[in-house]
Length: 203
Length: 386
Image 1: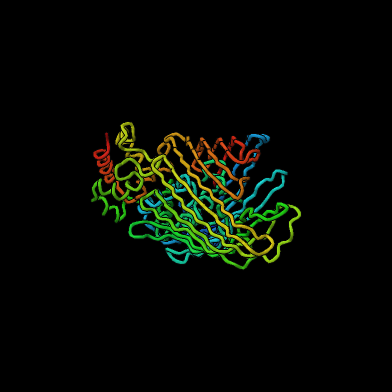
Image 2: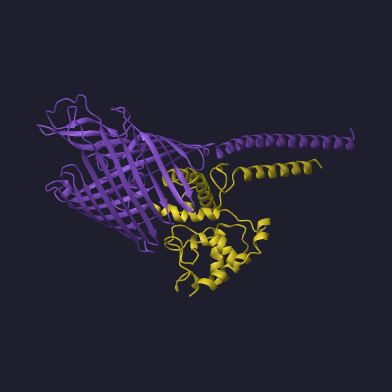
């Protein structure tokens, strides 16, 4: 009896210890500042694509840690004359795209809501910032969907796998984040979106 | 003691000792957990700081082969940039510039040092020594990993037509005008000082020291700024202007009389700039004119002078390869003709990464005969932005 109680205590302590350790060392970043307030990921992608290349080569989101991006983007707010809203949007985009080990959720309430969207809706909300309205890419290095030898020559399985896990095309300044940076997308959303992309842009 | 009693006593002893062992282990583990809790608490404090400390910057190394000069390897410079940020309210920014001189000594300069207050979404207060917001090159393009060529356009360096830095206060930021993005910078500062040259019989204006001075020798402040709009994405059009007073504070040439009762002169700068990107193309240009007025009183009384420079640069990236070509034309006109320079530069870059760039460029220079401004140069550079 006593030995069993002892084992139970040990198990409880081990569980608590693991919980504490798992809380203390999340895999998402070096520091997790609670500032600035979050911005809009999609607007951030557009602002990033249209502004960062004005002066220098665009830097990939995974070049810096999330906390390093805070100081870097605030520095760039001063240099590039960004508004506060644009600054927060770009920061949210870069931190959200810095996602090689972030596991997107697929079971959230938002996921259920967005799964009713069409492929066109998803493209317009998530993909358009980098791939552009006409699928040719909004900035240098983004693959051209309308190119006969472009990414659409790959099979659906390969492309869906690339979109689900994130992918960097040769010559692209940064990797496409997993699910285009929208963790709420389901595999069904992505299949519909790929169908829309093929229908609209494949040559 | 019968056997049953012995067994009972032994069993009780075993239970007591087991219980004692369990309690000891539990106490030990409890102490370990308490220690872990403290460490977690410390780690959490460290993980969620209100102050961020960040270092970035850039450096370059190179090789220079010029007409009428020895071919040389060069350590272009090391420019660490420090950021200390308190939440989203304040940021201290500072860049040092470390360079190896021709004699092997090391020169250290404070390129800029500002404390920036993020007042609201549209206004940032910038105080201290700041890079001149006139045009684009000095404030945004001079870092070696940003500049697509190994050298600065003539007239945009430390003794050219475009102001380099100043000490004062600045408001800057961005705001939309209708559906168009725009950005601005306005400042008041100590302003530049002037250099005059003594030729043995008289004075002539020789240069503008437009780098931040910690004292205002003539007690006359300068105001200036830049406003730019982006009518469409990836196109920026900027207009810059500065006005104020400046005074001669130093003289070049031997045997010059000491400066007495120098008269303040008008000081005005006007600039235009543009930048446009489309796919692999990047086209940009700038024009800057600095004008200093006459002085009729004081030791160095002389006529006014003008310094003008402009450049246009075209760059093309051969995607998806890592090669890029660059062409730049610059025309710099200064007082007299000794520093005048017309320059074509042809360059090819290889982007090891987006911030590590290998450059090879050839400058075709046309300046005063016999001067370095007339020597063509082959330049190699490896630049690293970090």
